[in-house]
View: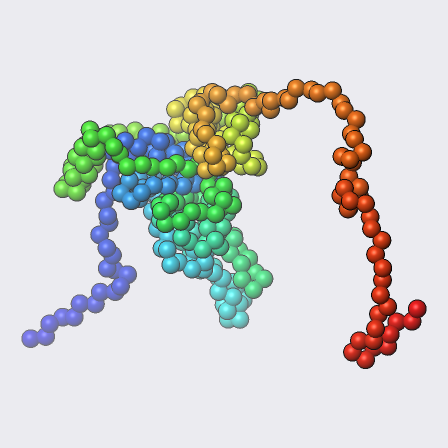
Length: 358
């Protein structure tokens, strides 16, 4: 008896879809949830950088955000990925065959409309991080090869994580992340118990936990979609612009990126809460997320509202002008010593060159 052969292609065999932990079931991470929601509403913010020790729900939160957005793909960037795998490449060889240049899309194209998760972003080569941040801020990816370039949409929520014990991110790249926050190990016993209860319940029966949070998940998903649609109708008043500028000045940050991120995040927060205008209170609510990784080392964070006025530099008391003494006046490039005459010697013949004539 002949047994029929099973002809199963590699494309037909797909791994089972991994269930995502419900976003609304996360315990003890309100700032992380807020930052991810704001970046999801306005991906132009430039992504979220999450720093913290292992086991603080960094990857769980990123995957949960993707599950919350309708039809959003969740793409993970491998640590050993090449630049071509990330941005894609152009098959210019096709020009010789049929006169057309074909784009082989990379991970940025796959992440369009979803979440791109980068674990240990501080260990990636700078070229990859540059490409990531450029696409995250602009929503467009440019692929170039042999003098030919093509562009495609790449609008995604960038979520990068890092463990400070494994190395820092260069300041030039750190500044280009829109929002950032630092997670810590929970030290409250009641909070740890709640986290354990939620995690164990998910591991035992993911569907049961999903049903338990289905109503909250649906409401939050609808709120995010509505907030995205409302963004163009919200504007910033001069009061809000001035307040964001004052916050940035008080924090001592370089450049204007912090101001712009604060304004976009404040607008996203107002849209999420269903309000028709952006207020200075919205700026205060998101300021630390935009300023924490840009503030000079050693500067302390200020409470909300304390940055409403630019810091004043203390003025030293005026002193009567004194006439400088002769000893205190510099004497040219020689300092306090007078110039001394130096003699010269006649140049002798060197290596066959004739002596210089007087």
